[in-house]
Image (tube, rainbow, N blue to C red):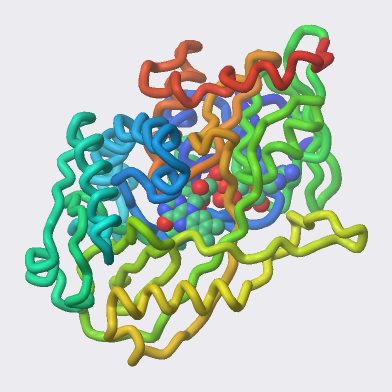
Length: 402
Ligand SMILES: Cc1cc2nc3c(=O)[nH]c(=O)nc-3n(C[C@H](O)[C@H](O)[C@H](O)COP(=O)(O)OP(=O)(O)OC[C@H]3O[C@@H](n4cnc5c(N)ncnc54)[C@H](O)[C@@H]3O)c2cc1C
């Protein structure tokens, strides 16, 4: 690359959000430059569970009624995401191991069944056709699960896809449409010029490049707050270090995505037959010598949480106790101050967009489509308004920009 370059938009981060947005914008004719400091898919997008979960997540339900009501607002986006995933293999022109055979959020106790009933009623009001199954119906549908389960909420469109291949599909497509995708290239400096365009310093293996651009999208996952900090801006996203485990292969026993309404659990069987186990159990952030969290090193497996995760999984699916654990790994995602994704233009910095936070494997493709529309049309589509960074504009009340 020359030492100075110009683009219509600089996208920072080569995960799902960055690459999918690059795909949409390059298709719309934008001159896109995407900078990824490592290799594509090296962040949460390549480390996640691959669950396509459209029921209200347990993390909203466990924080009381207000959080549950707030969380329910995401259902309208989940419904769009279902349609997005149904068409994604055709859109990108290659298989992505998308399996949408249905999902069960199980309950073990009567209290958990009550919570499921509350959740399902709210979802049905919002047009999501979940329904409650009693223990007998559940056992009939999923005989591999424990007969002791009290029941489950069933949604026929849930499932999973392969996080190891999706990002490349978007990136290859974006390149084919003219986007420049630079790996090994980190955003190291960012300033707003007097004419309100941006000057970015990109550090790569071959030295430094200055990119001048009217628009920047920070799609750098849990590193977004650090990068927004280059402009003195505040994006309230917090790192969430998690763990995943995978067993050896077995014959097909689990066609569905399994979640638990009362405990942290996600479980599924891949195309190859391995069982993937996760559900939001925390790992531990590495620390620097001064004791502060080190976001640039992998998080550390927390053994007590690994044991607890596997215990819940084996209680829900007893046959799991017969399987060998092949690997456990960590990955770090981020949640926002109100648990909803933060997606859109930053009020204090016209032309600066952010997109991060929440379950962005499930929601990344549809959010990227809506964000690209926002950027191209200069107006936020109705479906994105609740995710706007403007809800946190007060945090930038003291920012100084040209
Ligand atoms: C263990 C785990 C399980 C999960 N399970 C699920 C699930 O089942 N379903 C679901 O919907 N979601 C799940 N998630 C969440 C989901 O993975 C993330 O929300 C999503 O992948 C975020 O994608 P992203 O593109 O925003 O960020 P990332 O994939 O993290 O990408 C950010 C990229 O930015 C790059 N970057 C950082 N700083 C710079 C810089 N200065 N310059 C250039 N590049 C930079 C990084 O190298 C990285 O590649 C899970 C997350 C984890 C960790």
